[in-house]
Image (cartoon, rainbow, N blue to C red; front, side):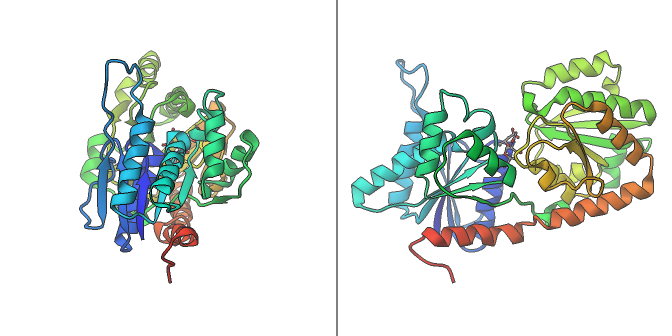
Length: 378
Ligand code: GMT
């Protein structure tokens, strides 16, 4: 099949998932065309089946807001027609689903072809941004106009029906992880650099937005730090980083926290970590948590959104209510003090991640595509 993938090219979960999906589809022999404004960060391999089409948005003095959606729709039309795509798979509704709708109508008018559009909802496109009344009518319309709609968790599916007047069936297709990539032996030298005296290693990775409750990460770590020697790795970057750094200084734990910025080799960093903290206000799925579990890192999180669909309470990790710092701290401390329980839980986290292995989810997407594709798969 010839598949167009539209996504955000950044470190965010939706872009990571879309890129990994495209790479896996290319490995399966499909021709994959990425359409984005920048080379996706995880698109770091050469594969003859992968094509990248950059959306450039010309500026003009009149434009206070350059019309990205128009440029995106025009690029989609160009790629669909010149590369004879079989379908478009857009990740994150805003503005990808509405741009895809526009491209579909243009292609229909130009050559009579009805290009199927599949929209995958990822989370904040529904729960935060999409609900805003400045976007809601377009989001509802373009989701309903998609030929197929998928959500990355049952929770996100339910939230979508609750927040928008969706008239179509939404399929849940869970996010996935390449377990082989994350199942790595810890590099001793690396561990020694981070924790020279054998301290416990705690980790958090995100885009440091308000929804991630970064302050809670620092406060939980502070509680852990009072009980045992430990180091905290903060991976990623975003608007809440400076507040977190200030809080760390205020609590006097700044020497035990390393802000690593955006990192591509997450598997190496996770392999040396003991506990992954994710105290989010909401996660539709929590791809970062799943990657941690695949690397045998125990997840201590809230039970918000779809997290309970991957993390099993008391087996693969622990979950608490949003903002319950005391509960998340004591779960972490008790576990980190008990080597046997920690080892057992790390193994259970890995086993659970295997259920979401890439090899199990790619065929589900292929089956979905085949429902719409001119060329049926065997
Ligand atoms: O976590 C973010 O804020 C980034 C966001 C994105 O769209 O890139 O992540 C969302 O999609 C991920 C991939 O499906 C999910 O794993 C995240 O849980 C979801 N984030 C939220 O729902 C806040």
